[in-house]
Image (cartoon, rainbow, N blue to C red; front, side, top):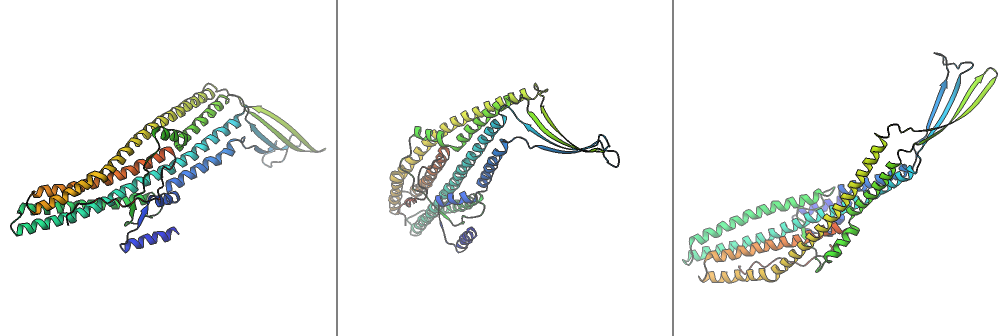
Length: 429
């Protein structure tokens, strides 16, 4: 099905058709196609598979021996020759196996949480590239409209100059601005291609067509207050939950290291078979041994120091991650409020007034009441404000995507598409 989808997108691009791409569809694609996410999930499965073996003692050793054979015929000595089979098993004591199991279980849980964090991180990266593509796409549309309006201004200046009402420098300046806008359009087109490439780089296949038009999601009017966001982050951010599991694993590993100095038992049984002139003799033996920690100062006691240091490292890392998360959530909350308020101001006040100023100055220029530079500056101001509006909208989306990654929870419906927000470019026609 994916191959068919790729062929469809390629065919649409080949025919010059544009496709609408929503953020929700990209999220679903990356959840199924991201190589990073696939690798993280495989790592979590590998960690989970190690848990059962960590709770088991070492494999027993089976030995077979031919005792007291003559060389080189290997015939058994008539009196001492014997065939032996021996089975030995190491048995850790003092609850070492249970603690090793706790360590493995905590490490597996941490790996699973890190896989979840990778999923949110990949999701956030897709959102960043999506909003960059949206900004490039909408800015390109505005640039094309602005060039068309500048061409109309240049034509008006040329007509006025031809009838003696205009100035030749005005015509030249208008043509220069048209050329500059053409340069900006070429640059934006290249940026747009790179944004599509960034999106496709996060997938296993090229699933986003070059002609795809990103649809801006409908952002929420309000988001939770700062303290609620911080509490959600501390309770649900996968990276913090992985850090908590790392601390549990380090604590269990420290307890295990303190018990490593306890000698492990080794038990075994042995069966011997001996053929004598008087008949066959079968014999059995039972063996019990223990490890001797003769290098305890350099081995077992150092293991305690290592485990204590790793536990302190895990606790410090978790404390640092919590502090960084709280701080970053506060920054993003403020950035979202700034972008939200400014974009509202641009739509409701700045751009309508700037567009009205262009319409008024163009009419005044045609009757000679304002000079050409005033008209040109007003038009380029509208272009600048339009570009800034799309940058603010992209910033809104980026802050929301990173907030969702930090709190491990979706804030709004990414499949709900906002209405068209192309700003008015003034009344020059």
